[in-house]
Length: 85
Image (cartoon, rainbow, N blue to C red; front, side):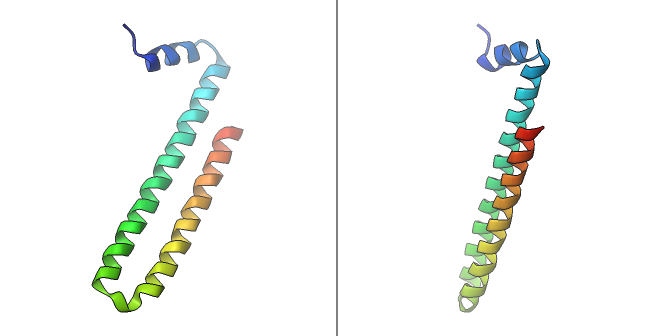
């Protein structure tokens, strides 16, 4: 019994178009995973810093939202580039 991913890789290796599609999928997946990890770390750090200094909650929250938006924009750019290549 072969694994489905192994069969997919073997089929993709047979043609240049298959390898290109596999590369697009891997690139898009890595971009989304990286963005998710980055935004998760921002949220965790924001929560921890607001617990330590509640008086600067507004400033921390604003900065965290801006950073999350920048990460999301970079991830969207990475997805577009992955699908264009």
